[in-house]
Image 1 (cartoon, rainbow, N blue to C red):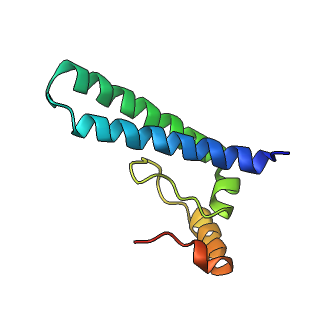
Image 2 (image 1 turned 135 degrees about the vertical axis):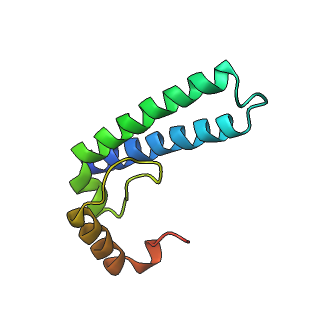
Length: 99
């Protein structure tokens, strides 16, 4: 049975994958100044704000499992999140992401 915690983690992973796919598509577009790229960029802003809201609503679960806000996120750094993330990596040193 899937717990709520795993469901939240999976949902966040999907949201991040959507953002990364769209960014890759925008940067590789044949007409970066064209209307399609502009519309995709606007949609990217919507996805980022939706992901930020999701992180704010589920920040306790995500930060205690070592998930930071996405690099394109507009969320300010929160001291509680940073402490939770560092504690997670102290307990699970092998799960620390590569730099």
